[in-house]
Image (cartoon, rainbow, N blue to C red; front, top):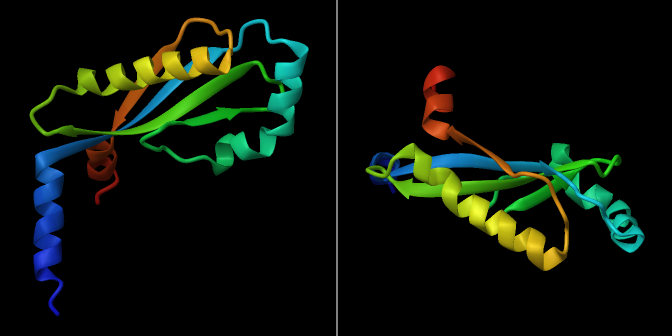
Length: 123
């Protein structure tokens, strides 16, 4: 079977949607001793060097338990402005942090359009 239709489909998908990597960062607030113990116990599962950008979000932090990041992969229709990419992850992060009972400082959101990465690398 020829791979040309697959390649054509992939190109069409890239033209119809934008892919963003969004990071929501903040500092942890005053954590309870039990929460700190829990975070330390799960540290290996949240190491930034082994984490991915996912639709659901991936929590990352280090052994200092001072700051954290939540990593999201967001796909938007090609006609949506880039500013939209950070809105849903911010809401999701706020919800996640509330449900988990993690006090935190002000959330900062950064977005990277993956197309800009591919173009700048010559891909």
